[in-house]
Image (cartoon, rainbow, N blue to C red; front, top):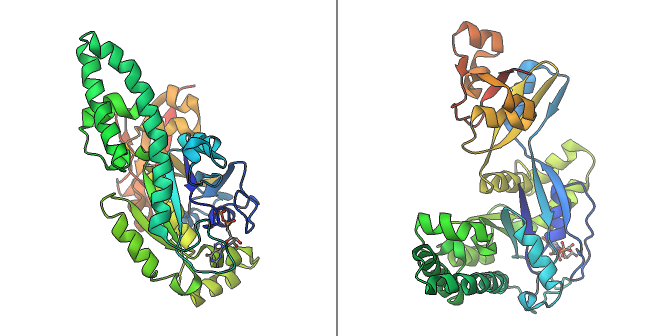
Length: 364
Ligand code: GDP
């Protein structure tokens, strides 16, 4: 599962990517500086992991991760092949969620491709390119479906109806995620098309330092513009955070963050947001060798969760021993949890809950 960072050139995408991952993506005051998509594996900050570490004292601690892809700059006309156009759009299609960066800071030294700072216009520019690309996909599909539908094929007629609804929506400047479609239309006809504007999105407002906590007028405009999209809007002082990330000393970083009014990096908020957007959750394994957070899709069964550790665990799954995170922490150890009768034994049907501390029993 991965989230892609998109936005117009010079809004701060590469700076954000650098800040999130340690990979050195290029960042310069020049459009198209990120030509190849850069993939970063980013740790998901989770306070529960530190808590478990303090109780178990393991040899090592491994956090959950999420993949972030920095996607090359999109410009007006990309869907028609301008700039890095189609290559860029192909990269987006392969992601599972979109982090849309909007420039909400003024700086005369940083060129804006459209001459002025206006995040709502920028968002519409990007959305339009993505919608045009989706429209192409829909038109191609429609051509095929129409032939079948003309022969009287009932299923094809239903599909044609759904596709026409999407086409009309896109032509009216709406993204597919915001369209009023039935669950079965989405499930049967739309989901498999991998439409770009159907992917879940989070808007990242890149602000200057003084707006790091409360945002600014640009952010308010963005919030108004996206209110019907049911999307999260977060405020991040990307440039400032990137500078802070450069500091080697943890205490020093913390001090600088506190200076701008933050008790944790805004990027931590963003990574957790991306994790939610991807509908992922965490379970833990907690042994003396290793305390570790594992990533699973929300709704995974116990064998599926076991399969993330090793496919053999899933194939040979017998049962899982499960401790709720809160019980582990309040009682303080696995032994105490067992004594208190709070360790549950669960079978194949068990749906894993966020924060479960698990042991798997399996045949090899
Ligand atoms: P991209 O083209 O979207 O990847 O943009 P970059 O990350 O390369 O940023 C473009 C320029 O804007 C660089 O010179 C950055 O240092 C600068 N920049 C990025 N974020 C901020 C910010 O929050 N404030 C200011 N003043 N400059 C920033």
